Image (cartoon, rainbow, N blue to C red; front, side, top):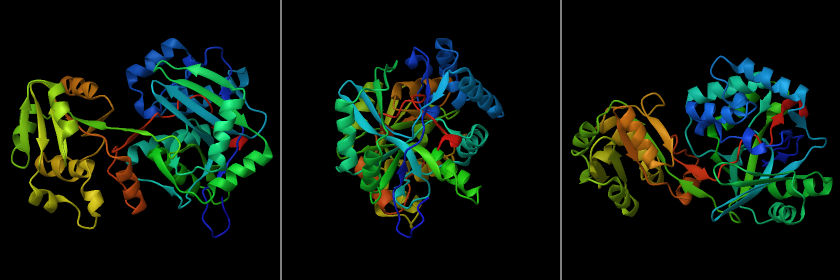
Length: 408
């Protein structure tokens, strides 16, 4: 870690671990928290060595992940790159291009800004996995405002270099990866990044896991760093998507009826019409959906909201839709705590959330995405938005490059 008193955003190269199989797309996956149990089996049906065997071994099966990792390394299914490197990573798809740098980021720098609350369950799970495998199996996703030497080098390498891999995943994205091993270029990247701030766009639980793992060791070592993708948001602005909620067992009719005491509630026969109303709403707004007609919630009673919101929070935080959801709608209107047992999450797809709500005899709460500037403003104030408030895209694909603690 940085030993001077001057804080730094430190990114260092490492010897990446990569698959050697012919069909690389078949062994990759989305990030662990976007993979359902059904998805796990589907991925393994495509290829028995899919990376989900490592990232989602199941509770109490972390030793199985370590055994798989060791076996794949000894058999040559995985290989370690010969030189420490930064990795230039490009994702491209329909109307989307994102490039960034994958490296080992210094943990606990004040220049790495979390903006979202975390829950103990996922941290305990990821910590047990990292302890057992002694590896970072997938990168967190960081955004920074750059425009300097690191950003220029990323584009130069992508334009001129020969990629280590070129993969088309089943979600329609093309993934390309290059290595940067020249000491002069590595030094230039480090110098450019050291005084910048980085916002955690995705991977808050894994970053918190990095921190806990580091705290477990008194001496310096590989746990002082964690695998990360850094993207210059001034060059490649991210796409911010919504994360919807599903409340099992809360009947839609009951949810809508109880909301009427605090919100204006408009009923829609068509879910699409309700979603259109949500997209154009000003101020806090949600759609309740499931079995039956959908309901658009707008214009909450300002006195009730004000009474429910924590007074120590900033006005910017109190105005967020997810803050009003977690502090007012869930606990005050419905008597529900916002935790991972009572409130499930569905990334991006409102129709998938509604299907899940119907399966669980519950209610889907559909949200608009937060604005990027709101997430940045809250982080700059030293606050964190409620859990699962933001979903920045595109997220890095898991399985393209991994980091073993023994390899830097």
